[in-house]
Length: 330
Ligand SMILES: [Zn+2]
Ligand SMILES: [Zn+2]
Image (cartoon, rainbow, N blue to C red; front, side):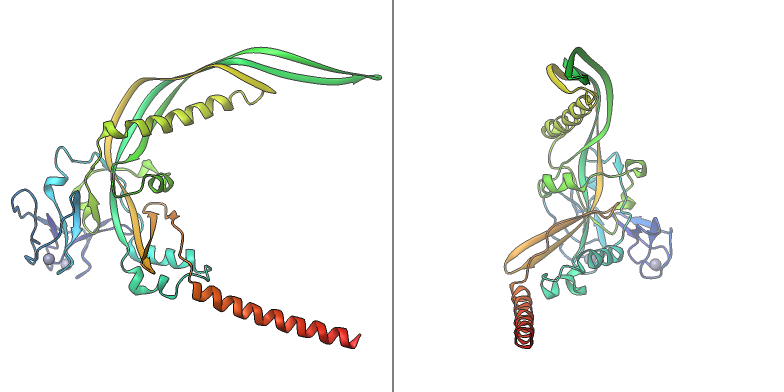
């Protein structure tokens, strides 16, 4: 599927800033038609220019390297891969490039070409597949808590320890605990992309994919259920313990989190990715496409560190010279 401008036949893309379909060629908004071309199950040839495109095993949306049109693979956004939801990109490529420059501006040891226009143009927006887990839980924490009271009377000091049977039984509902369903996206980094604001979640429409890269889920909801449950249990236990913070000491004898109901949904979350290569090593950066949160460490240019040391060395020599002069005068 390709979205074509009804005005000039250019490729319509979703504009995160304008929140509408936009034609970068004639700048018209909102007017578009879908162009469907079915070549077997998946389109291996660009429906616009006929060029052969490389489709990754799980790719659902990509850009044609010849004519730059964004192509959406129908079979990978239809059942059983049809997403329920999408959090649309809120920051476009130009905004993202600016954000990168601002974020790393003060990082003086980064290689010279780290923030050049040419390098930053390789930033790609990805819709990453996620499973979302809703849980209804009954959380129980039981144990013994103590409270200590001390006072003095005359020359005597007193300490009174009171013992309490503590029981907390709380029903906590959890909504949309995310777990990324993409093999190529590192789990720990995807966890760091959180939080996303789900208030801005939309019902999935293929239009959102135009202008970006996308993947269908390539890990099942069952495989990732354990990760989501772990996150939920960790948070539930932290909450239960926080309700016992008023005791001087607490020793638990029961701590359980029971799931009383659950629901799973599937959706796409926006992530910008910048793969920077330096000295044969890849430095990946990931940015939450909704909030702009950046995760990644910039490489260090040894040349720049050396140059800095030399300047710093020169400064030290100069200071020593002044000190010597001062010693001679006094
Ligand atoms: Zn147009
Ligand atoms: Zn093409």
